Image 1 (tube, rainbow, N blue to C red):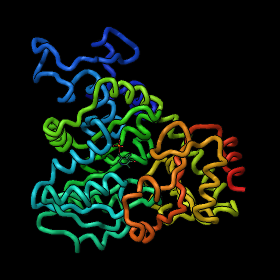
Image 2 (image 1 turned 90 degrees about the vertical axis):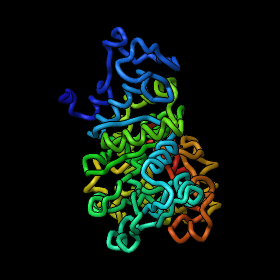
Image 3 (image 1 turned 45 degrees about the vertical axis):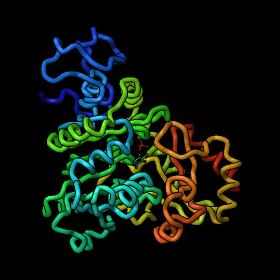
Image 4 (image 1 turned 45 degrees about the horizontal axis):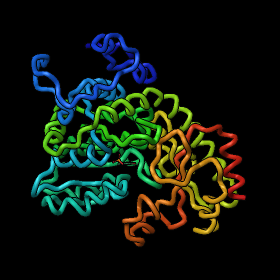
Length: 382
Ligand SMILES: *Cc1c(COP(=O)(O)O)cnc(C)c1O
């Protein structure tokens, strides 16, 4: 079928919808039914754990369309997407190359759970492709990176990851949560699988936990089969919330791209701020790569207050617009100290070696009025 919708904002609203099968309902209703009569099945039985009810199928079509990929499936969380994807291509004796600066949950999965499955791994520096080959083993099956690393907003050599995977017959996986399909579409660059925490930008409203796997049909099918065994499927009500939230992804992320860059520039010029990390800043070591790969620099940034942990805490007490909470990608601005939240499980010396000092503040920029948001931050910092 040739896609009728070419542009992301149109696809968000219309792609994958099947109004005829729901009697013309303009909004997708919730099909809260665990199983379906077999008499109506064209192929396999429909069941929520099989991820093939109407609420799943509309999301799968829409998500694949958004990243110009062949296939997609939703999962019960971002970690379900990531763990199921890993376990679909790695078994006892296998080895993976994983980026050294990972989301905390993924870091825990790799460093604490892989050993129990007999899976080994090596960390790689995503910005130094020449160093990867030395870490290959005859059993290396997967290379795994994040589009934008948390919390220092690093951007790996994404094109080199795909080339390396092709050369060495690896499955290339990328956690595309921070970029969202609005800013980066891994399939267009040849990645096999793009993984998402749908909890973040895709849903965008802090009211659901979900995940997504998007990519080549063969690999997505393999993850779908593994998911039926591991059971990390998404409930129809959560599907409905994810679907509803996704429709505004384009307008939300466009605003967040713009606001985050403005906030980053404001912070960079403020005397109470020692350092700002945002790939849109000219000063960012990742700026050139981000400009080459992305349609926008994203809504995430981090900064080091000059006055240390005390200054960070004072800021948290004084601001009235951003909420102090973990997670990201939602309509409201959020502040957090990664050393206390996402990276609390990473030993201090490992943290500081990669630049995650105790006072580092991460900000997920929301869609509030920009002037009011910057005024609020200014009051907190002055
Ligand atoms: C939140 C997050 C995850 C995990 O997602 P959950 O929905 O919380 O399971 C994975 N990767 C990144 C980059 C995240 O921000």
